[in-house]
Image (cartoon, rainbow, N blue to C red):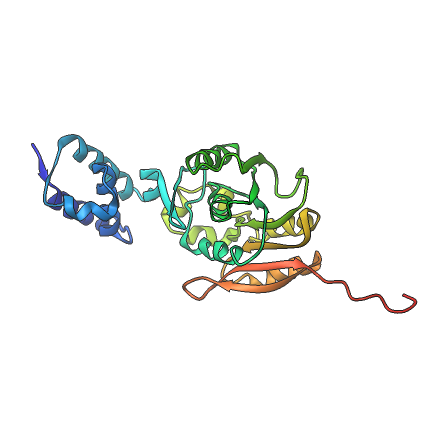
Length: 287
């Protein structure tokens, strides 16, 4: 027996709404498009047709997972970031729209060699390389599982010859110098973790969300080692939490890097810091 797609969609939205899912209809539409194997933008054309039993089973299974607050990106295995599809698993953060603030800031800068610290899915590094065909880059992560996802994305985007990936703990064990160093490190304080949405708190890798304590340990580690990896005139771009600008800028200033700009996301929140090595004052006569 077949079920009308529109009726199945409405029932799914009601189920997700009852489960407390924030955007029940939008999520139900994405899951139905995935179950039917159609592009989300073309789903409306399919809503007047019946759903075949196999597709309905896929859809209902996906809806049950979403009702358990599993993120849509993990259910469908994909997330669009800067206009490109990236594979997503439970081993990496779900690429967020606010991280596109860092991409926009990076594309205002000159670079040929990029270092992405804590690369996760590789979405930052691979987006930058896709936008700059002459550039090459290295993505590092402490998680081998995350690096496997990043390599999968590099192959899918045809960037495997320009993107290398290596297991590393922030700047430790990295050779060479880079025009641009980027990072979206874990920055959520331990006390803030219980207040996160279930989709984040229960399904995304905890180590990629919070370093514990005050949330600043990753910045401390990056600040301590990044200047040795910067080419002359190079830049560092780090994503931050919306209340962390002063604290993070101070950590980098103590390590010899000054904040040149604060970039805000579409909600007007501080989101990305642009840092560069501090200029040394000119030597005085006899000094």
